[in-house]
Length: 285
Figure 1 (tube, one colour):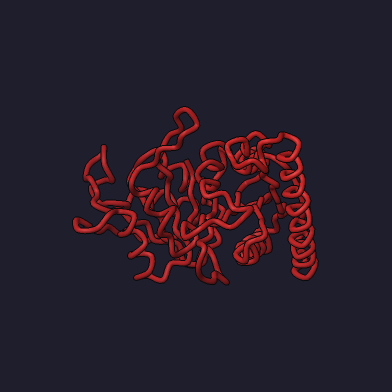
Figure 2 (cartoon, rainbow, N blue to C red):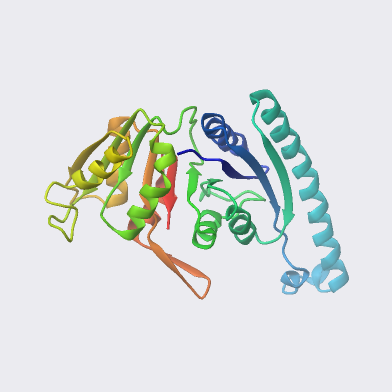
């Protein structure tokens, strides 16, 4: 079990190099092909119609968008140079793609031809140009592939050596676990955690997380089953706290939500992880 195609979304933010390092580490470990994707996401000229007089003229608005395109293309050249140089130095096979369109839609489309998509967590303190705040959510809802989201703060030289799996016996958790098997197979330590488990066949089992740990063992993956009760903090916070306690460098979890009229609605655990993650998070929906 190995990852053979990894797609990474790159932009002109300082964090782009950090997630590139994470993706290259995985590509090296799995012998995977790495595709760097840069999306030029420009507003349509009519977006400026409500602005003061300088933008009321369509031709002027089109000129503004064209200047934005030129600036984005110049930034993309620098990112491409850094990407190709890093691949050459690390001896990783890969390719570069530059696409204009809506970032979430483009990433989802190209991601369908990959085993894993690497994205950066949205910096809610203020998105830079080229960063789409809802990119992780919109990409995951539309791609049918798992995402590895890298936090907007911190360094992650090793990812996937000590893994925490959040387990609650739902379809989303089962999908995430199955998609993560290639990563788990390469891990040194895997811990499967049930939070506030429901016992019995319709819940997490009489011994919470033990059944799914046995399933992993049949794949040759040694996993420790654990459970905890968290009544005073949210489950997402409990997952991140447990990950910190055991020194996990990767969290695997299902993503809970649905798409309705292009509006993505998520449960509390997913919202918490998307905004508060402190380690890379492997998510599937």
